[in-house]
Amino acid sequence: MPSTAPNPDPMQSLLKAARDAGDGLPPVDRWHPDYCGEMDMVIKRDGTWWHEGTRITRDRLVRLFSTILRKDEDGQTYLVTPVEKIRITVETAPFIATRVDAVGEGRDQSLVFTTNMGDLAEAGPDHPIDVQFDEETGEPTPLVRVRGRLDALMARPVFYELAELAEEKDGVMGVWSGGEFFALGEGDGKR
Image (cartoon, rainbow, N blue to C red; front, side, top):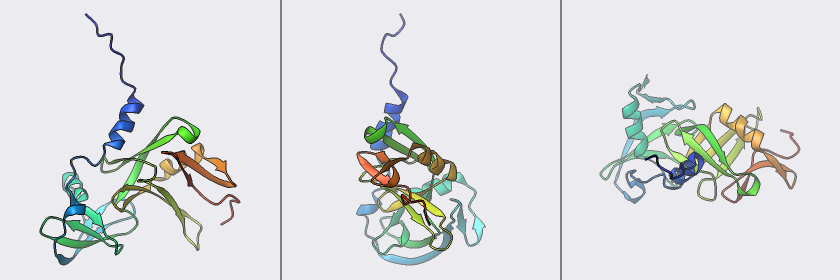
């Protein structure tokens, strides 16, 4: 006999997954090991990971490292285990937001970002959107908080999707998510 239960709404499932994100990750925020120095590891602006000048191409290794990242109050990013804390270099952000899904509209809208590491983050008070502008070029650097103090740089197509969702509030263009309004730029368009 065929099931008569309604199919779950895929967007609501995505929203729930974003709200539950972080479950199963190591509790790096509760670990306080001694600082062990720095490692020649760099996460480039394009999201690639490099160790001693060589790109790390093993996806599973990169994903493993991404689960033990922490950015501390000093603004530095570390790989943290219960017994070690090693500083690494992050050019812009440790993650890339590769997708955004909008659920709802206007003030009731929720924006769910997916990163290159599979993290989900629903923009809102705990996951703010912050667009910074280069003082010389005026180029935007759009970021969304993923976990802790770790951000994801929005891929250009993702930022374009946000721009399409933007509306004006008090002379500023921005988007709503999680009951918050996030500016995407200055209202007069001058930079």
